[in-house]
Length: 329
Image 1 (cartoon, rainbow, N blue to C red):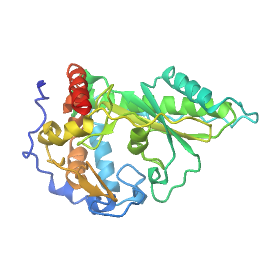
Image 2 (image 1 turned 30 degrees about the vertical axis):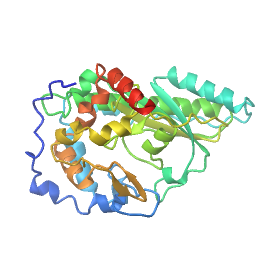
Image 3 (image 1 turned 90 degrees about the vertical axis):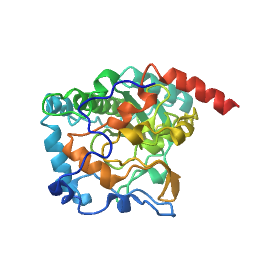
Image 4 (image 1 turned 90 degrees about the horizontal axis):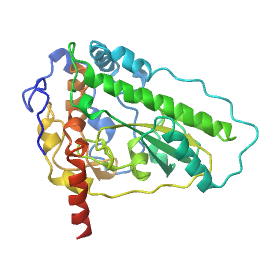
């Protein structure tokens, strides 16, 4: 299961943030994210929302500045921030059935760069505080990383391969979410796209889990049975009548309970060995106050998802088979 790690990565516990970086962490992100809270609530705007919605605007600017030093990163992310025009909603509605619409939406998404797609009923807990989404459905799109490029994270001024692949996948998410939203609008229904990397109204991982795209990993990212943790997400909300795809369980959560790979690979030690109570739910959580300073200095990161055993193409089939036997026992 072991493969050589990127030699440019600092070992766990050896990285110390610069004082000037820590000075920009003006408020604990763990408190804002609701760590230790026993009551369920909607999430608060966080690091990748507009700077006037959180205390870390200067830290966000530092992260952007450092990531743009990586060769090719500016061009890679340009596609993510190039938003196509949304067409008006057609005056005449297509009256197909929810099942027919669901199948057509999936077919369209797969033919427009999506690697996986799931559909979930909208939940108010998927919407950040201060925002409103009125559509009853959320479609989540998964865009798979190129594993060999992803393994090169974190990037630096000489090697931008890893961060460029991140930018490329976010750009695909922008293109496919806007294309799908426009297709839905052409059917006579409302639809709004939510691509990354900047955050908007829609939280993406919880509806992705509800839609059957994967399970939450110890590193705080989605683990897909098809791509491991090497995926980026985009969403589309809509009033198009649909059919939900439903949750799946393939053993990632159980595996994470004993696996320590990402915990040991994280230079700032931000990944806890156990679940924590976050906004009324016991789940995996990454320490914001440790993770983000490293992310800002290292020109983005992604080490945890690159090192995750589920992300490794040669390992994932074996893990799926092993966990299937355990869950079936």
